[in-house]
Amino acid sequence: MTVHTIRRDFELFRSEDPPVYFDNSATTQKPDYVIRAAEDFYKSSNANPLRGLYDLAMDATDRYEDARKTVASFIGAGDPSEVIFVRNTTESLNLVSECIASAVEIKEGDNIVVTVSEHHSNLLPWQRLSRRTGASLVFIEPDMTGLISDGELEKKITEKTRLVSVAHVSNVWGRENPVKKIISAAKSVGAVTVIDGAQAVAHTEVDVSMLDCDFYAFSGHKMLAPMGIGVLYGRKDLLEKMDPYMLGGEMIEYVTREDATYAEIPHKFEAGTVNAGGAAGLAAACRYISKTGFNYIRDQENRVTEFLMKEMRRIPGVEIYGSKEPSEHHGIISFNIKDCHPHDVASILNEDHICVRAGHHCAQPLMQYMGIGSCVRASVYAYNTLNEAQRFINCVSRVRKVLGY
Amino acid sequence: MELKDLYREIVNDHNINPLHKYEMEDPDIVLRGVNPSCGDDIILMLKVKDGIITDASYTGCGCAISQASVDMMIDNVIGLTRDDALSRIEIFLGMIDGTVTDEKQLEELDEAMYLSAVSHMPARVKCAVLGWRTLKKILTENTEGTIPGK
Image (cartoon, rainbow over all chains, first blue to last red; front, side):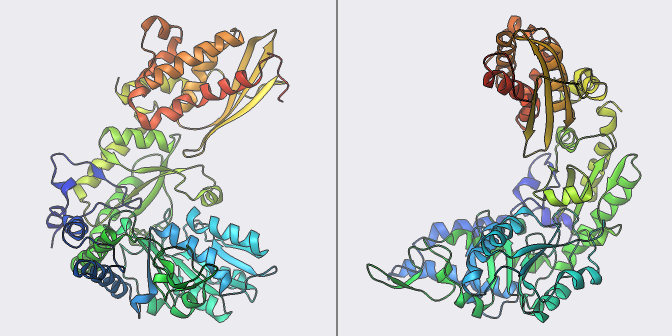
């Protein structure tokens, strides 16, 4: 397999003069295979899943539930009913933060632990839970390369800790957090563990059984699938104890005028008509990634990241954040150019049809911790080439001049 | 105008060597303007006497376009009455959203008229209008011309 065979699967890259798409941490492109799977659901199996008693509706239900099984096996979940389809990572994390208190007692004097590098989606829900319960929010502080020390874990995860929620891979540093260690430290004090896998699932194998976490959240659109479909993996016994997040259609068992009993998991957490086309697309994305293989994905990402970091270090005024080791970046390179505001940098790159993200990356506390207002982020995926990396380098090396320095 | 030319011809000079970027002593009005999504963050300071803007300055940080635009705006409005300043602001905002194209009107903006190129760069509109939007807020919320809001 080569990068060029993969690129042929994407309409955007087949077009004449495609842009250099280096914003994969925001969302990836979607291959034909995924788009066809979502389209095919609506073309040939479209009925409201889980409701009808006719063949077409049963076919729709089968497709939707097959998608659940595919996703469960992709992330190593023991039981497909532990896979809840939601819109995205943000919804997953909100679901857990809203409903966890119905299964686990969290009260004043307890601690909820996150890291200072969390995306706002894995911070704001816990801020609210801490305000409601009186529990304190405690921050694990990595060093400036994104590394979390054992000592820091020991200091922050204590007998008072009731819940720990951390990113698997930071969306700014690109560094993998020691989630196995964090989970086992949390387990040893009886705390619930939540992993935000948004930046991990497309780049590295995830096995929730091996991780032994209670919850694992991710979005489809950052792993080649359509927008609007995401997953919350949850441990069965916890999901069963938790109250539902939203109430409505097809999440009930029996309803009277005054009361209701709820359906079994996962349906208890999937009120209303589901995103079946999206689920079919997500299942196709899982198959596409498995077929491509994480070895290939990592190799190509590392090849491009290594080239980028080596060349960027030679450009005067460029500062790269995080680890010095390209393979520890999961394709994410956050950086600044001396005296140049990230938005000007992104605009100048855009003139050369290079797509990057600039701003605070929904991680303002991390920006404050790093002592910067914002930064530029180039994020590559398995379909990006060294040629594209060279175009990026050429443009980055001109930025200071364009801005008059 | 291409982005590179915009920077070279007008923005860089005001960004790197701003005329009005400093902390003013004893201003009559101070107002902060922020673009939350991109982090542009300025503090605008004015001296107002008898309904006329006698001096203005700013501090803060942000992209070159946001900072240069404030600097040019201040150049443009010092010495104006409240109503005249408001009408300049309307011309500028109109230029950026494409509703004001009359050359004569645009010339009132002096150098700031070169920022008209931003009207074709939707991602940068917020940057260009930050200072103007902030000044408009000050002037419309303090109708007496005598400003308490320190």
